[in-house]
Length: 282
Length: 202
View 1 (tube, chains in turn orange, purple):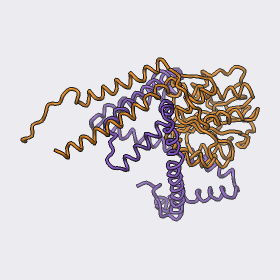
View 2 (cartoon, chains in turn cyan, orange; view 1 turned 90 degrees about the horizontal axis):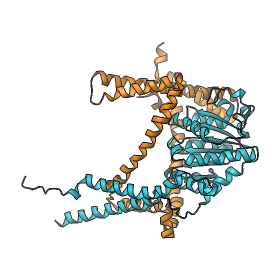
View 3 (cartoon, rainbow over the protein chains, first blue to last red; view 1 turned 30 degrees about the vertical axis):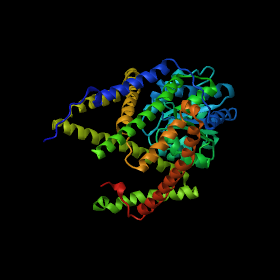
View 4 (cartoon, each protein chain N blue to C red; view 1 turned 135 degrees about the vertical axis):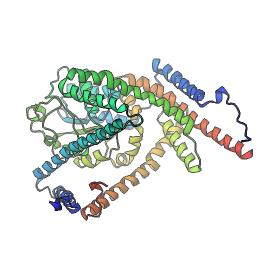
């Protein structure tokens, strides 16, 4: 009880320190968000391979895209550029696209496909002939397994209720006719690896940095043909294709925020060590 | 009737389809029946969602009746759930409004939580031993290797970050994946022999 508590100064309060961090984050990121300066960016080989794999689908071939990105991807616009890359192949080389979502988190990823299809330029393309949307299907790995076994058994109708048998693209289609499989990964890529690698087809992945880091074993084994590594991968893809979206501006903001977070971590640790030493000395 | 309630009956229900699917996988015999069985799995998945929803409602409604702390938020959940469900099937314009004008901006708004991450770095990223320091240094190098401004400042960030990702990280991930695979096979064997019954609950 004899201990006298010192009054906390305003700059020592946790709230003030948090506000300072908030303020710095807003200031640093908004400057680059509002006025991107286009930092030089080395395009990594994985992104080059990713774009190349999509551009190498044989003329008139078929690709399948499994969507797991939620609608935030629509606002940050990274998926817009990716879908545009798909549809360019459809327009220029007659590549057919099957959209599906096996997303474990629910129907929001199916909604994402709908939003994307609403805004893409599909001039000259016919729904059901050049592309089809099978929508979100429950079951996750069961869906992936059904795709691998026989795509005709995945669902009886597309996302809009049209029977599969009435969709020209799906008529007589076999899983082995699909030339490229690609997926966006919101969880570990293990289920896709288990179900789709035995098909021995090019397999593309997009996902956050941590998920790509988790997938390194599969990448080095060649199970994953190419990948987009987090938001940097998307930005690199935008640089290659020339379809710049807001993702590039966001990445520039993140670019400066990375060193800022590292600085925060170092500061915290130095501060912690100093305080510990002071306590020991006292 | 009593046999239907026995644990052994549930095990048989689990083991026989499992053995059949394994048999089909390795022989390719009876593909149609196997597809049908997988289809049942899909249906069961939907039922499990139904049971989950029922259990959640039962729990929240009980809390509401007993006037437990914060139980009033359950009302918001009930209203949201049923209006969403109604709009999805009976009022497409309303469903589109919820999706485009409520759920999407709210989802995007969650990105604001990034601020918490930054203050978390400030408040919580303390290392207490040398292994923690090692982990933190690795994380910093990997993070900086993904940031163009850092790699332009010193090319070493790129080299070290890429090495961390490609060598130690890949090795650990491979070990985890193999460990998981071996674990899955072991669990399957235990399930087939009736020693593992976690899928029965309890």
